[in-house]
Length: 143
Image (cartoon, rainbow, N blue to C red; front, top):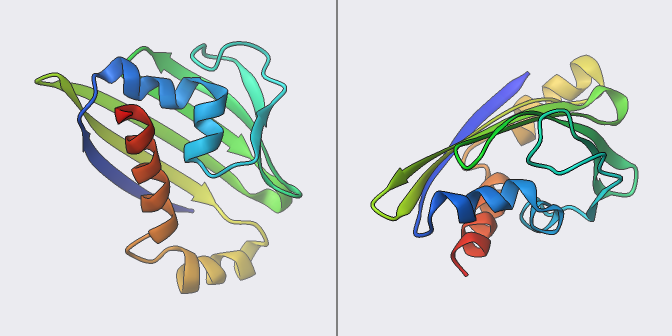
């Protein structure tokens, strides 16, 4: 299992940043996904399930574990071939803006081969894809 933590200071109040984790269109946008499908309820409610569609067969059955607006949002997801993730967003207000701490833990598919691929190509700094996604979240929250 891999993990990484990204942080940002965002010039927007926590409630605007929190929306990026709870509005389906915004979630799909910043996570560079094709969409959020079949939600069983609001994405700001613990227990809600939905499908996060990345591309083609890469769909993650996702569940909201905790949601304490506008301070905490946690999801877990299971994808094809044993892929999984857990994402915890913690938001803190600071002088009219927000400090975001985003922890992501993940398991890549394909067992030992997947772990080797992760060490070789995925689990490397500067985490260009993850940073690009979080930069997009910042853009959405500030416009």
